[in-house]
Amino acid sequence: MVVPLLIAAVVGYLLGALPFGYLVARAKGVNIFEVGSKNPGATNVRRVLGNGPGNVVLFLDAAKGALAVALFPLIHLVGPQYCPFDADGLLILELVGLVASVLGHSFSCFTGFRGGKGVATGAGGFAVLFPVGALIAFGVFITCLALSRFISLSSILSSITLPIAAYFLDRSPLLVGVSVVIALFVILRHRANIGRLLGGTENKIGQKKPASPPPAP
Image (tube, rainbow, N blue to C red; front, side, top):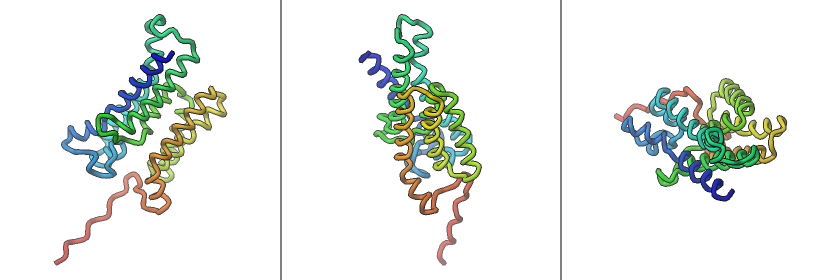
């Protein structure tokens, strides 16, 4: 099973590394690494370029995580002889693809190992792997966003929700463990946001930047 694991890791990483945020912004004449928070994730793209490009990036980032997870089950469905694994074996390949895609998104080889925070890509993967948990986490995200208007806080809390849901819904210990690791990774990637949240300087969704002072006479 070593070769399939390596394939899942490499393909998952390369899918995750596709820099859609950078490419969509570049198509608009913007280097996303030089504006806003300098992050190529959907949130920064939306903040800089508007809802349309931001939603496109959100969808594409989620889709690459979903494909990284669904790749081997799809191969098994089309031709079981090409992917002769039982349910446990497929789960391991799916989890490897998920982790690799999140790492690829966050440390893309196509952009000098810079990238986003892995939330959308991880969410896409979990939507395929653990749809009930993903739906619960999405509910937490929407509720937190409606109450606080902080995307960063909503992302952190929804990522924490996944392993809790996996545990109480009696999912595989391996799935629970991987969801814990990804939640910790998301929290680590948001450490600057956490500092701003604690300091009261984090941007809220829809918040307008303060007007620049008039030039000195």
